[in-house]
Length: 145
Image (cartoon, rainbow, N blue to C red):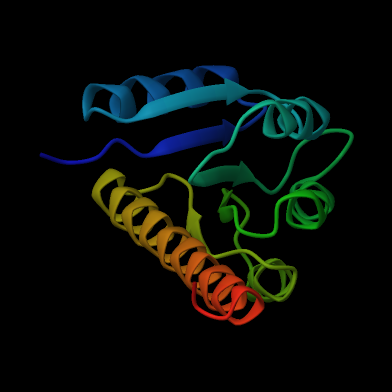
């Protein structure tokens, strides 16, 4: 049984975002769609997500600014950048700002799914390392009792 991925999809192209969300939902994942950076930040504070699919070029707050704020608020959330205007410079800036990966529009659906699964796996591994470190710290403080 596949575990659903909790996905926040952020794209100002409403038809594209809703269609992608339907396809991801049909595969058993849980998707929340928003259409700009400020909405994404609001939703991100309300509940946790395994991964965010974030459009780079949106009016107002662009994807890089949104990414930086997301990582500041929730460092473990994995962000996959989505752009129809791909450039190496933009990808490098996004990766240096904490993005997990990026995909070019029109995204190949299976490629995006693979990246989402890898992002969820990475987040789960990071959370497990944190739990183990906290458990070791507790053991040291209590003397192993």
